[in-house]
Image (cartoon, rainbow, N blue to C red; front, side):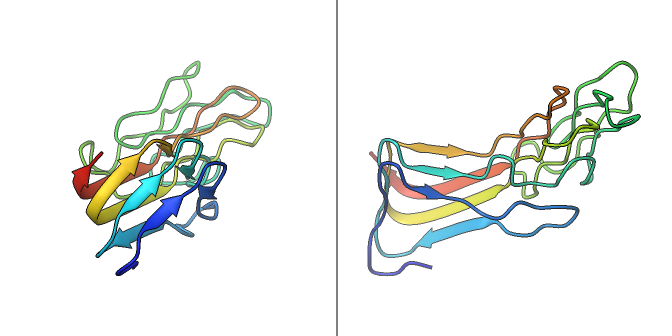
Length: 157
């Protein structure tokens, strides 16, 4: 919690959290109770690739082996189909998800998924930078599910 001061994410600065595996490791939770939040152009809060690891999580996609493309992971909706592999099932809330994104089913690694960002600001919020929670892809092209971004504020500019 930040109380009585402003929080600024400067250009070329990033706020993030550790990557998950088969359990929730970290999330980004920022609460500015008596001040303002400014994310300058080029500044980011990014948790892309910080969700559940490959083939993990409640909506993980399936794979048949190391070189298999596998199926896409689900989160707020079902994952993508890949030549008959079991797709990742939908879980969480479509309008207000609170969970990490699940891992895709690719057999070649590298497709961690979106993490969690929760920002609450009682002052003014100025967003000229980015807040991102994308799933990532492995070498075979299987995508992980996106994560969660929730921003609650009283005034924007």
